[in-house]
Length: 253
Length: 253
Image (cartoon, rainbow over all chains, first blue to last red; front, side):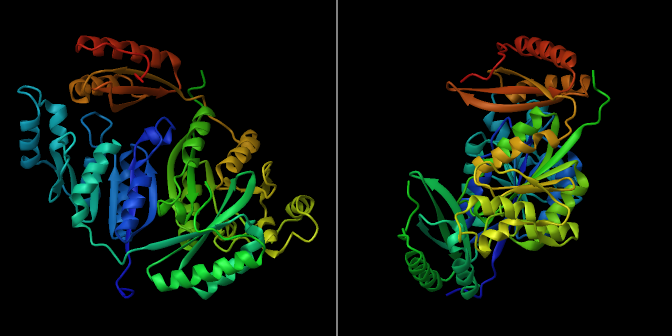
C-alpha cells in the first residue's frame, strides 16, 4: 500500500462572466473533477471567477499557495475579454511576453496574412511558462509553476488536459464504492455516523434520491485502502438490512 | 432610467465533496445564476467548497463581506456529513440552536416516533436566523444576515429560492442581447475591442462556437441601458457585415 504517500490536492478556477450570468452552463469542472480523482489528486476547491483582473489575480494567488495544482479554464482567446494570461502573469509578478514557440505554431496554422495582432495575443504567455499543446485549434495553453492555464471551450480544454496529464504527480488512487437503499437518511443517520467514526480514514457521504416513486439514499465510501472500503461496505449493508431495507451495490436507475 | 441605483452583487457557495469528486454534476449554480440575473443581481463569484469546516467558514466569511448576498447549497440534511448549518453559525460567531418553529414543522411532518435525534439536527439554525420554507420535504433552510442557506437537492433548492425571492432587493434589470455570426474571433477582435471601448458601461463578451461544420462566435452585450445595448448591437451588426459575414440575432442551432 501507498498509504504513506502524501495526498495531492488541486483547485479549479473557471474564468468567465458567461458562467456567472447563467448564459453558459459549465461542464469543465465536472470533467476535471473526474480526471483528477482518477489520477489520485483530490480536487479540494473550485471557483467561478468573473472577467475582472483583481478577482482573477487574487484567486490564482490564493489557490496556488494552498494546493499542489491549479487549473484555470477560459479567457485565453483573441478578444478583449480574454484576460486570463495577463492576470496570471500579474499574479506571478512576471511580464507577459510573446512566446516564439507559440508564434511559430500560429504562423504554421493560419493562412498568410491572417495572423493579425489579435491572434498574436494568443502567443503571449508569462515569462518562464511552458506551453500546453492544443491539438484542436493550435493556440496553446501554458503552465507556470503549479498553475495550468487551459481553454474554456470544453473540447479544447479536454484535449489540452490529455496532453498535460503526464506532467502531474498523482497520489495513491482514490477508490470509491457506492451502496444504496430505499431508506430515509434520517433513519440511517445515527448508524452511518457511527460507521464513519469507526473508519476515520474513509470519507463517507450520504446522498438522498427520489426514484421509482420512493425516497432512498446512496452512501459513498471513498479512500485509498481497498480493504477498509470493503469492510465498511459490508458493515453498511448489514446496517441497511437491519433497518428493514435491501442494500444495493448501485443506485437504482 | 435607474442607472444610478447601486448594482447588487451575490456569491454562491456550492458545498459538498460529491461535486469535487465528480460524482455529482452541479446544476444549482446555473439555476441561481439565471434567477439572480433576472432579479438584477449580479452573481460575481461562485465556489465549490469541500465538506471541511475550516473551508466552509472561510468561504462564508470572505463572501459575505464582499457581496450583498450569499447563497449556499448543500449540507443541511440529517447525516454526519451535513455540517453547513454548524459552519455558518461558527462563521457568524453565534451558537447553533434548536429552533422551535422548525421543530414544530418537523413534528407535524413525521409520523409519531420518527422525529429522531438525527432528524432534529435539521431544526438547528444559528441564533438570530430566520427560516426559509421548504415546500418539498419540510426541513427548512434559513437566512442569517445576508447569507441564505439552502438545500443541495435541486428540486428543494429551487422551491426554497422561489419562497425567499421576495426578501431580495434587486438592482436595475440586467438586459442582454446576443448577436452571432460565422466569423472567427480573431477576425473581429480588433473591431470588437473598439466597440467595447465606445460602450464602457456595457459588458461585451465573445463566445466561439462550432456549428454546422463552421466556426463562428456569439457576442453578448449586457447592461442596464436598453438604448445603449440597441446602439451597440446595430454597430456590431454593421461590423460583422463589413467583415463579410451575416449577423444573426440568435445563435444557430
